[in-house]
Each structure stands twice: as structure tokens, then as C-alpha cells.
Length: 390
Image (cartoon, rainbow, N blue to C red; front, side, top):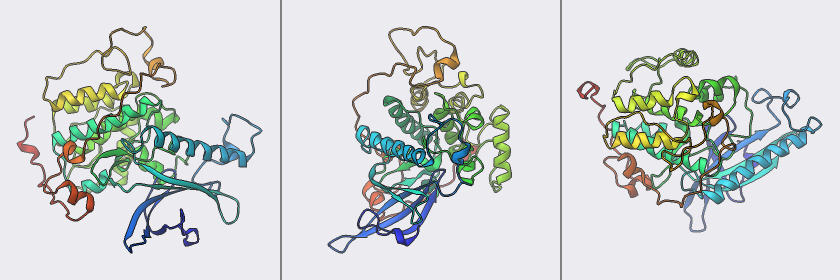
């Protein structure tokens, strides 16, 4: 980020770029408090209207609501959508299941040709960062899946589907609570489908979402299924090199091609019948054969964690695991086509957040030491896959 933009939000200065995604770059920022202490935070910067190689050109967007809309008006609409999304998350969730948005502002570029959206977020560690220090056991994988499913259910509670799920967007705050990130802007931008950031994201996308870009009611749980698969497959997606060989971009592309062709997922390195059946259902090639809501997947993950016998559950509707009345029969694709077409259930009262230590049992470190970064936990020994029951 050019230093000419400093300070941001009045007193913050950028230190370094720490990430990038399909719709922006992420920076570490800091400020000096009155008592001389240094405080750090995270800044996400989204640029609009400048780099046409990273997003669709305004002139090629055929599905604009108003064909007579000016380019300036088009980007102003995008900015409003992003900030409206942020305000929804801030007001409804307030940092419980999604990374908290502290403050935000919009600017024009120095040449006046583009727009910049600056968003300050709470600091959080990503799942890949955590995996650099921990290997997940089977139960920890189930607990993580349960936590993410609860966040996806929270999305549905206020009428959204989260289509951008991948390891980088599964985050843990300073208290160790699992949250989702990148929610405030994902649904508004149209990045180039050839960009490297999008290419990394599509490795976790449902086939029909990659082909058409249309969101249905199964794309979030599909992506979660692939995340869980990678956790019990030594961090590797299906159809890639087996450990200890290095995963190549070529094999990732092959993995994507095989999923797009509908090939059945191979068994992961850490095999558990119940979890693998959950993953296969979440990642079924046909959308109507998948979990049609995160509540369904949540129920099966909890049953697997409790070691209950796996049974094929007949769900009575797509937004709850059980209900007193059966809904009118509809075609499967009609049911999952849109959240707005289905009557949303009443928003439940928020529950007390569960800490990361409780959900995935971080070893050899107290929650306070972890939160303050005073102690780095020791790595777990690699799981002895061969000793596990099959």
C-alpha cells in the first residue's frame, strides 16, 4: 500500500502486506498509543475502477440493472453494497461468528480515476497459519466442522449464503474463537476468473459455481466438505500428490478438472467412515444429492463426534434438521435455488461463543498465552494413520 495513504483512520500506519484475495489486499497496520504502547490491527483495501485485468470491464457487464447507468454510478453502487453488507454484519453479528469490522471509509485515487475502500478488521489467525503449528486429529476436525457449520447457519439466519469458504477465510480471534472472514465484500465484486486469487479460491468451489457463478443453497457446505477432507488428508485436496511428495499447481488443476467431471473422491489418508460419508455427501457432484443446508451437515457432524451409528437421515425441509410439519413437495433444484424463495426461520437468540480450546483442543498452551502470543504451542506429533481403525 502506498505510504501516501498513511495515516489511515486518523492514526494507523501500514507496516506490510500480509495477504491478498479475490477482491483486495490485506495489510498489517499499527499505531502508537498515548502511553507509548504499540497497537496492531488489520487493514483490507479494495480498489475499484483501476485495474481492468483483475475485474470485468464496465463495458462488458451485460447484466446491469440499468443499461443507461454511468460507470461512476456503477462503482458507487458497488461501494454502497459493500458498506451495507458490512453494516448488516456489524449490527446483526457484532463479531460473534464473523470477524469484526472495526471501521471503514472510502477514498478516491490520487488521479481521480478509481475508488478505494479501506476496512479495518480485528486481528485473527487463519486456519493455514494454525496448521503450520498443529496437525488436526479426527475429533478436532469434526469440532472445527461443527464450529464453521454454526457460522454458516448464522449466515442463513439473516438471509445470506457464504460462497467464498476456503481455509484462508476460516479465522481465529485473539480469544481463540473460530469465525469466518471476508464476508462484507465477497458478494459484490466480480474479479477476473483468470486471476491467481480467484484460481486459489476455485479449488474449494462447487463445480456449478465455478461454471456459472450462480450461488445455490449447497455451495457453502460443499466447500466445507473439501476443507474437512484436506484436514484429514495431510493438508491435501483430493487427486493431488500423496504425502510426502510436494503438491504442484499442475496436480491442483487436475484435482479441479476431476471434480468438474464428477469423479468420486478418493479415500483420505486419515480414514473414518462416518466423517468420510459426511464429506462425500457434502461434495456430491449433483447439488440435489448434497446437504441442502448447513443445519443438516451440522447434525451429522455432531452425531459423528458423539460416535453415534451413522444413519441416512431423511430431512423434512432444507433449513432445519427436524420440523413438526412436512413442507409441500418440490423439485430438488427448486428448493435450493435461492434463500429468498424460502421462508426464513426466526432468528435464534445468540449463544455464548465457544473458545478454540474447547472446540479443537489446542495442546500445550493456555488460552491467555495463546491470545497474547507469549507462548508458541509445541507441534503435535504427526498422526500415525496406520494405527487408526479403518
